[in-house]
Length: 76
Image 1 (spheres, rainbow, N blue to C red):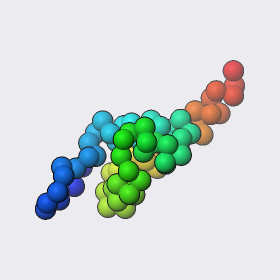
Image 2: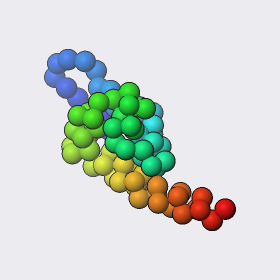
Image 3: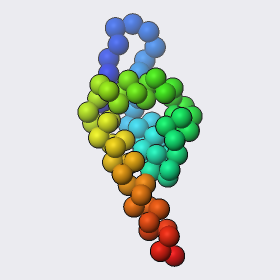
């Protein structure tokens, strides 16, 4: 899951950060709001989305599941 860089800061995206992003997206947050909540930049989000299929699949599933959550809440 971790992308390796040759130089610079250590990578920011770990399992906990990915879960924070997915949780925020699942609760109808925008990508900007989710990134702010997880304390990562939008550039980092889209870099991982483009280059890491596992990350992209998890974020797509979170976006799909937000509609399930909303439809479940409207039943009550």
